[in-house]
Amino acid sequence: MNTATKSITYPIVETFHSLQGEGYWTGVNAFFIRLGGCDVHCPWCDTKHSWNSQSHPQQSASNLTSKAQAVNPAIVIITGGEPLMHDLFPLTTALKNAGLQVHLETSGAHALTGDFDWITFSPKQFKAPHFSIYDRASELKVVVTSEFDLKWAEQQASLVSKSTLCYLQPEWNSPESKSLIFDYILQHPQWRLSLQTHKLLNIQ
Image 1 (cartoon, one colour):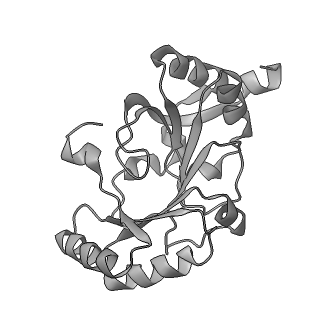
Image 2 (image 1 turned 90 degrees about the horizontal axis):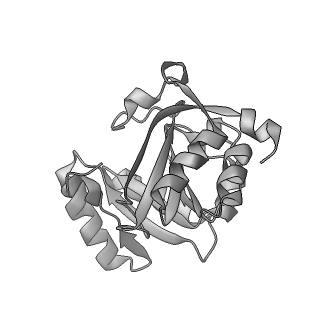
């Protein structure tokens, strides 16, 4: 790792070792790096404390890599907030040089930076995604609260690669969205269901 990479820092809301709770990698041993800063501002966001990047201490790419290595995860997940508000190349370079598999969870609201093994793209209507994300998305995950969200989901699905896995995820505080998604997937088999299993299991 060069000196420049070592000196790069990021606002860190938290780091923790747990299981991936959503999407294709559900149940996999994961180390999470939650970056501060978000300008998308979803009203139902469950990590609103992450929005102000100035509220969180800076940590170096080198230190974050050491923390990830110490727990020997199957994957490292960079999340937020909106992680693409930051230049992620230094962080992903450090992690991959350490032999770690690196994933991204993003709304795609900013231009893509970083080198990733897997990208979970969760577009939001509150801030249009940047064009650079669409052909790089490994999975598309759309949070659903109403039928209008299903229309948004189909629009976004038409823009990603044919190989991208497509998920619908009910908004946790909207019980009606679960039945809405269930019925929709029965009629549209190209979609899969994603659940926030970490909340069901009461784990971080």
